[in-house]
Structure formats: structure tokens, C-alpha cells
Length: 444
Image (tube, rainbow, N blue to C red; front, top):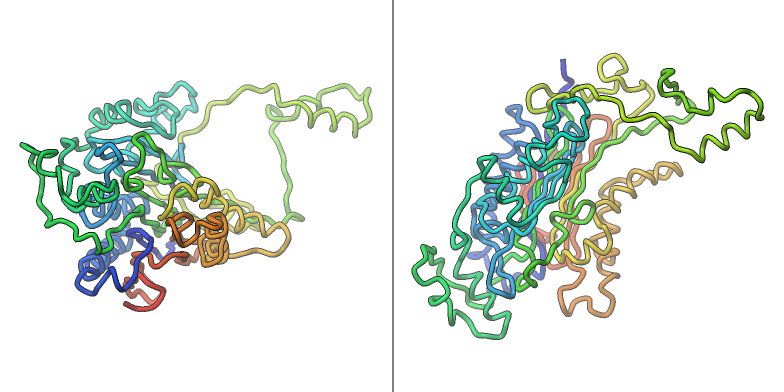
């Protein structure tokens, strides 16, 4: 029987130069209402037994269908007046590939579901460990883009839509103004004859979310999942790849064991003994071991047993040698994060993985830092992202961003978030079970 863990969830809808002057109550209301309802429905899925993968992708798909946010239906335009979507998903355990990213997508209604399909089908090798398994057609690849991944989307049954489905008047006018070409001029000609929803346009003042959207979820089985989706930067060059589909930059999830070193004993079956253990005793023991450390094992890859399917049979996350095979002296630790903001700076700093590494490896010096502390060091006020912007900080939007995440320690999940800019749209369920929605550091 699985040991139940209290589910947790947090969702973000973008971060940036958000101010009360460009986000009046009437404009904030629809964002708050959307995040409130979505956070509630996603948490209910988790409470009813859904996996973190199902819950997180559900949340992000809903944001992709809502034109308020910069993803899917509400995505921004490239400099060429086209839309290129990106998405990613990653789990802390339970799937062979662990994570997948997709880029340069133009026709898939919900890119996050495509990323999920690529992840789930990544174990389609019959469970034998066969390196030639085709991963449902994606082979062993963890990131694909353009026509290649869109053909797989059709094969896998993802919903395909015409490109004009993603067009919104607000984003088009934002695109034109950004190029210094006025407001809506050329909009009617650009979409003539196409079925495009008229959303009322943009006044050039009201804040429009620029950043990525994402969700981090922890299920009762102890799996963390991060799902992230975006349209990228407004007026980006066509072909630009951002942090959202890039491992370690805009997203990350991992699990590890914190082990008491004095209790660690490593044994190997005869088939996995180091080759130098069979060398006749003509060399001193120390020399044999030194030589052994210089050469890789001559053993080939062995067939693997089928991996448990978390979607069908969740894995017990308890620290119990009898049920989970873990040494009783180990502590399971896991983190997952989704970033939003200026993606190029997330890329330069490998922001999400760096935060995870701070948590994981700080314990080696008996100075373990929490995920909240690590996130603050990266995207909090005066953090690494802000410092990386240098003299450009506060002038160009460079270095601005935020991160949401969940840290799991000893079976208890904690929601974390921080940002260095005006605000970050976010919704989460607090430790008391109350759904919270905020955009600034204080209540709206």
C-alpha cells in the first residue's frame, strides 16, 4: 500500500513590469478569477488521486486555451508576424526520459499535451532497455521542434488547428506598436478571410502578460511534475529558442537520496565487478584501484526490467527498505520549478537547475539550504538574475523574472516562489488548504 502524501500545487501566469498603474482592479479581476478557479480545479484533481503529471498538464492546457496569457491562444508574435510556441514537462521520477521540450510549434492547439505525449511515449521500448526503441516515434530525443514534432503530434492524436486560431487582436496590436508601426494598422489585411476572434484590441497602456505560464504539482504518491508553456518574447526573431523548452533553464525537476555517509555500503554482483578485481595479484592493491579508476567498465548495457507506470500503479515514496528498496538511513528529497520572465537570462544562468543544485549539494557541507532560499538567490530582489543585467537593469526588462516551485522533504511538500520585478501572477493552495491568488508582494 502506498504511503499517502498531502498534494500541493502552484500555478503562475507570467511575471514582469506589472504595476498598479497598468493593472487596475478591472483588468486584474479576470486574471485573478481564472487563476482562482484553475488552482481549485487542479488541486481537486490531485486530491481525487490524479498524478502530478495529469494535474500539471491539465492546468497549463487550460491557460493555453485562455487568451489572457502568453501561451497557446494568447501567444505573442514574432518580429515576422508569426506565432511560434514552446512547451515542456518534467517529472521527478517514474518516466524514462524524465522530461521533454518542444519548440517552433505553430499548429498544435495545446503544446503542453504534445510535450506530455513525448514524455510518456519515451518508455515505448518494451521495457527491455533496448537503445533502439523508437519512443513512439520520437526515439530517445528529449527535445524536438517544427514540422518533425508536429507530424508526431498528428500521429499521436493531438488536436491540430489552423495558424489563425492563435491570433488575437490585442497581441497583434502589441506586435505592431513594438515595431513602431502604430496600433492596429494592417491587422485587418493580415487576417482577411480568416476566422479570428475580435477581443477588443489593446490601448497600449494596460499590462499584457509577457512571460511563460507554468504549474508545479506534487501528488499523493510523491511525484513532482513541472509543466510550462509560452509564446516567447514579443517580437522575438523567428526561430528563437527560449528557456521554456530548455532543460535546467526555465524548468527542472529531480529527486535524490540524502544519505548518511557512514552507513553507505556498495556491493556489486559478480557480473558488475570492476574489471581490475580479476587482475592477478601482481600489483599492489592501491595501484590496482588507481588503474581501475582510469578506465570505464568493459561491461555492455544490460536489459532493464520494465519501469513501473506511475499513471497506472504509483510507486510508494516511503523511506523503507522493504517497500521501496531504499536504505533505511536515506531521506528522499525532491524539487521542481517553473520560471517566467526574460528567458535569455534564465538560459545564461541555467536558473532552475542552479537553484536545484544549491539545495542538493549544499548539504555536503552540512549547510543545507531550502528551495525557498535557493530561488531567492536566483530570482529574488538583488539576486543573480538582477545582477546579471548589470547597468541595463530596470531599463530594458533584462534580468526580470520569477520562479515557482515545490520542495519535498521527508514526505512533506512546501510551495515556494519569488520574483525580482513588479509582479508575478500566481495561484496556490496554502498549508491550511486555502486557495490563494496574488500578483504583487502584498495583497491587491
